[in-house]
Length: 213
Figure (cartoon, rainbow, N blue to C red):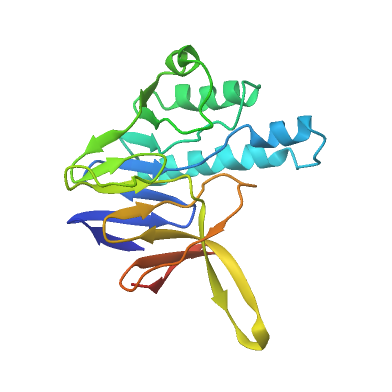
């Protein structure tokens, strides 16, 4: 699904990522890598292969879009250091020609040295006009820049016959702000309440479907 946002061409990908054509930038939010290990350590029987699937999807996206930059909009890693961080580091090392960048989120609590030794550039916020990238959605807009963020894990509900309904992850674009879906597995969904004219794009299996706006 290709959209025009602030005069820029964005491709919305069913893997819950965005490709920004002009910047050759792959955008993702809320990967929460290592969350599976965190659950398992707490005795919650989450399948360990979910870790592998998250990383496999990142590799597939890089190979299909050939980006110059991969920009994570916060919550790249779920919690404290665990071996999954080293596995991710091998992925970064494999794609040495790509700039890996992280806008820090509330779960990004590893030491700055951990990010540095993996070659990941850190930001509190990233301004690439006409956009400002943050993890938490801004409460007040800055310098007329359109805010793209994560954190919310947006979902929208489809209603069918016989009172059937299902809530699915979505891309959400309001007048001044857009929210990316959570990339990682086992992250949950927060149902959004779009206003008239907002754009909502549901991820339905392997396709992105516009349902509003």
